Length: 89
Length: 106
Image (cartoon, rainbow over all chains, first blue to last red; front, side, top):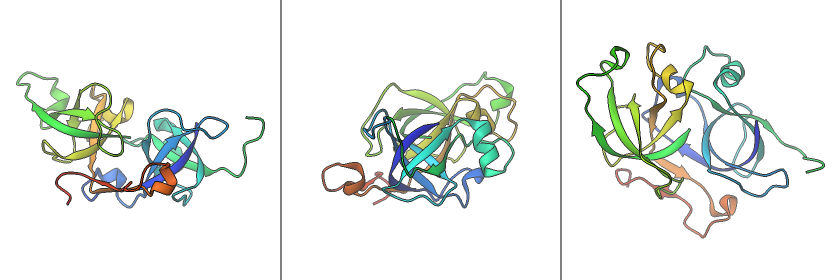
């Protein structure tokens, strides 16, 4: 899991059936103290997060399948929490 | 899932049977604004993408899961054609004009 900032929405009409009806968010990974680090990626939302939110993201297929309550598919990156606070970073 | 631009097609007459019926595309990974980033790779196409289009792809085991029969060796699969990325400058810290579009979108 990693911390990230939601920096955008991604709109895609033609997509894999597993992505239908899913909100896609552009997430920028962050260090513990909130500095951007690494490449932004596209994540499926599961917690109704929006642009500007500080979030927790999983990047592993089995975790994604559990969160989305689906059999294992092509999704591995999912926003699983909206972060209220990070202490001791 | 990561952004890329389709740069070409890869034709293999002899290929693993589990990929039969699927095209292989050459893609250049990009940042959210479309700037090339990292090295070119070959991905299985699930969305009938064409050269020049902006797409996103999934890596690893989940790429194989994108095909109807998950028992295949794919390590990258194109799972969507990007219409638009709405990234307000205030969220990214970028210069104004954060919204970026693919070439076929505007």
